[in-house]
Each structure stands twice: as C-alpha cells, then as structure tokens.
Length: 141
Image (cartoon, rainbow, N blue to C red; front, side, top):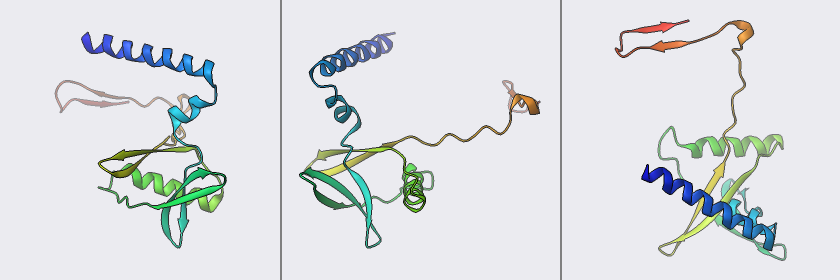
C-alpha cells in the first residue's frame, strides 16, 4: 500500500509540474521529457557516430562505443531498425538523452518496439492455452 500511494503521489507531482511548464513555454516540455530532437545517429566511414546539435547549424560528432552485451540485448534490435531505416528512407522516432556520470558522457536511447501484426483472429478460430497448478496439466484449444 505504501509503494502504491508513493507512486500515485509521484505521478501527481509530475503532472502538476508539467502543467506549470506548459503555461511557461509549451515547446519546452518536448525537450525536457523526450531529449534533444536534433540529436541523431549517423554512419561516418562505416562507424556509428552520434550527431549532437550545438546551435547555429553546428554539430559535434561523438563515436558510439556501445557493444551488445548478449543475444537478447535491445541494442541489436535498435541497430537493425536504424540500418533498415537508412536503406529504405522509412525513418522512425527515437530519443537520445545525454547524461554526465563520473566525467564521462553516456547516452540513453529510447524507442518503441514495433508491434507484430495479428495473424490469428477470431474468424480463424480461437487459440487458448490453459495451464493448471501442476506442470503436467496442459490444455490447448
């Protein structure tokens, strides 16, 4: 109960703060919640770089040193989506937030995973899996 009330209080305070920011500058909220929209990944000589806008159409290019930690790392999915978008010119939104930690700059990337299309619909029948308490009881309809 204590965790739930704390979460509700935190969400309410965030909502209240965002309402104050909207009255000050409605465009400032975009940059605070979603990072810098002028920061993007680019390929330079076959290496991945992060292009950071400094204003007046000037950019800083930072080499990305990220390697996937295992086969289920979401970085692999993100890089696949980036490479595909560069080839097909069908871009997708992502945000990059830069953080300074112990004198080093870290980038946090957030993006939406594509939802797979539904293949099995109610017109084709219903698929259900029922598992009971014991692992040997399994029913598939």
